[in-house]
Figure 1 (cartoon, rainbow, N blue to C red):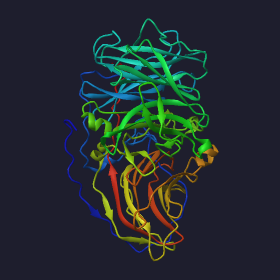
Figure 2 (cartoon, helix red, strand yellow; figure 1 turned 90 degrees about the horizontal axis):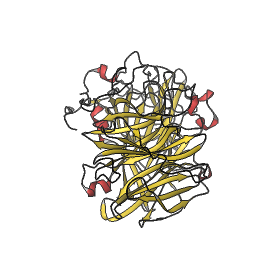
Figure 3 (cartoon, rainbow, N blue to C red; figure 1 turned 60 degrees about the horizontal axis):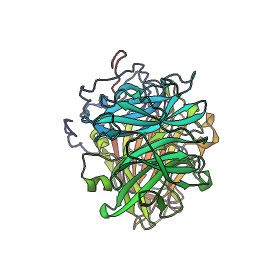
Amino acid sequence: MGDTPATPAPRVRRARWRHPVAWLLGGGLVVVLLLASLTVVGGGSPDEPLPAAPQPGAQAEFTRPAEWSPYRPAVHLTPAEHWMNDPQRPFWLDGKWHYYYLYNADHPRGNGTEWYHATSSDLVHWRDEGVAIEKYENGLGDILTGSAVVDVDDTAGFGAGAVIAMVTQQDDGVQRQSLFVSTDGGYRFEPIDGNPIMENPGEEHWRDPKVVWDDATGQWLMVLAEGHKLGFYRSPDLTDWTYVSGYERDDLGVLECPDLFPMSVDGDPDRIRWVLLAGVNGAEHGMTTGTAYWTGEWNGTSFTPDSDEPKWLDRGADFYATVTWDDPRASEADRLASRYALGWMNNWAYAGDLPTDDWHGGADSIVREIRLVDGGAGPTLRSSVVDGIGDLEGPADVVHDVTVTDAAGAVLPQPRSDAYRLRVTLAPDAADPAREARFRIREGDGAFATIGVDFEAGVVFVARDADAAASAMPDAYREVRTAPVTSGERGEVVLDVIVDASSVEVFANDGEAVISNLVFGAPDANGLSIESVDGATRIDAFELVPLAVAAIERIPSGGR
């Protein structure tokens, strides 16, 4: 990871097991940490070195600063203050990842979003760089979602290497597409004189352009969210766009935040499928709002899905407005085999009701790595935690070969850090197989959240109906989120879980199923327990791994 110091091998301590105690129940899912009340924002310099990943060691590195507010995450990106929502696809330039998200400094007194800029060397540690595209600057309204590209070959005429953002602007409810150009490496954008470059044809919903270069046609390719349709366009210069086809759905609400990209199946460069992805309302499919996708063929003008049935990148309540991207430093084969993904951790059913005080709008998910595998039911995307999270890991508490009965739980090692990673392999005991196993996280003061495996139904689930925020939230917040999983030969299920101050992200069976939810526990509550329901559960492996705080570098006011 560049000049980041190598992390020493963690010291492994086997937890001492005491006699089981019957104190475990089921429930909902709770996460609490202290939120930061930082108020300084601004911008950095393109030439400043990015912060290196810390070397975990002292216990203090695993505890969030005392001045942080209760739900400020330790390892997730949030603004210092005000409102955040949709992510914008990152790009690599000048030795950094450049990333933007929608931001409203006038929340809750005024509307309208703009693009806020953050940079990173490892997709784990971030630095604020300030507002890159301001709202209400060119008479066409505020700045909504879009995508930025590096115009290496000067196709648009603004100079080789210019960063060009194509974004939706909205004025009096009318959505149009505009171009903004940066000649300083993505730190500050200016609108071009010819905006809007695409005038609204009379559609209520006409937004979120996602632009990529299509090698096969030697042109730019764009997918645009047009209500119940995803429209495809192409252009030689990012300015003059021609509509070529569309993909329509009448079962997923208003489509948003689309994406289109090729991937190789199981890393085989001779098996290429294109993935079409969008933010949707999944109510007709037993889902909440989330990210649906289809695999299929792209022939340069139209997309033909392998199946009309949507698949889901994440089955949690809080993974929306997803962006994906590849690493331009990798070989072509590696870029096709693996991509990154990032989602907005919130849900419009309760986005304005979250119990955060110093900032609003939820958080970004951790970055995931996604790959396309042949899972027997057609090519399927699988997700895993980005490798850089491993640099935050400290010494693990490790136990294995433990049986939990329905009459008595097992005393688990307790978290010694504000954020942690839980790696568990568990299965119903052959002699007395349990129906379910449930972990309570962020347990304390009568509140908790639950991560569970229903062995009989073949699903993992996350419930937060008993967390500290649940009683004040809409019904959608209290709904249990589930995802199907395939058990191993001995009935085992493998979980990889990231727990932070106000969220949990569950990756089951090497990314076969993913559930991402916001959760809110009682302040300072961080208990962990397990319950086996209607039988015994075998814990084959258990690792409780502390995660060091990845504090966002806030640039003082008056900076760039």
